[in-house]
Length: 555
Image (cartoon, rainbow, N blue to C red):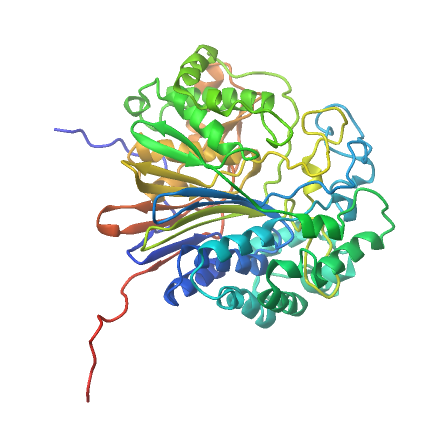
């Protein structure tokens, strides 16, 4: 006789949805609707994923765009995994000393004179999203690209109603955006931030998307949209380190092999460097595999302490060896090995670290999608334009918002993450897929910068160790640390004193990371999608199907 599971310290705020023909989960209802439209047309998961991402460039313009970067993890019906690295990179003219840092110490370590690495033309890196999405669709999509981009064109041309989430983010950066008349004309009409419920129409962007429908990624990577972008970058009189037409035309979205780890009989599959998640999720799980977390229970201060320590060790090793594998030698096999995980347990301490940790920066402003079809294709993808509204201006007559990815590089020369031509910075993006006996069990991911891969790891623990449903796993409270302090979400605050007694510097925060979404794969082909309370996440599930061949009706 098995005992009933202990009650959880939280209640789910959203409902899941299940189906057998396909599931689409994104962080905006219209993003999910675009993907579901592709499945209804007979498309596959790649068609749905690319349609959703393109639609999100319209309805989540603060988070993602064609001039941004990201990582897409595919599992193909034959069981192969491939990862599209669409991350932005430094232009050929970039130099390690092109920005002037204002400080060598925290909290201003990443800041530069005039905020040139954060706002404006000098902050823009070579984008990769559109190139990657088009390459992924060309290789694995089933529908014509014109069908896939159609929902994005429709909502750009006809408009959509702003959510509270979009409106609040416009208000947050209105002071920067108002300086550019092009972007403010759309999002701050009359100088006032658009309110929730206002209709946002992006006619110029609709025309850009129509051009992309005809020309594909070449419209930006060497064509008229690329020329408009480079002309705008040069307009402000900046003279060094800018993205060029040669950078755009020469950019490649790289296909990379996924990283495989294991945990209690499950395969844990994630992206390789420059993404940190495949390596360090596997490492942290290897550390925790030596403890009976299930016996401790989910709502346990002792379990939280162990999870925090595993995260701290993962970040220590990430800082020591992470980055673009073209520039940095990363000991992947060592870091993901069971032997190394066992050795790391000797580094587990009775208390968390204190003081400052080496600086690191990634934008919290990202979007994630999880998509699966009835034929066994899965896409877990995380993409961004880095900061909210990227570089916070818009390319005239195109509707394109450039990224501000140069802010992710260390502005100090001679450092591991210093700027170098063609370099891609490491990312915490964690589009993960979990297998059992070679078959998919879960796919998940989330936004949230440095909090992404530790949060994804905790969701995997929730599913495997604690037997949660996918809805419970994505909505469960989270813990996070980089070494200096420990963050807890409010549902864990009753453990704050116990963790402080262990020496942790505990801080209660409203949320850790962003809106996680996931799909669970059950028996008889049933898939269940879930989205959490931390974003506008929405699940669309496709059931039913076409009539059997030969069926007809006569009146």
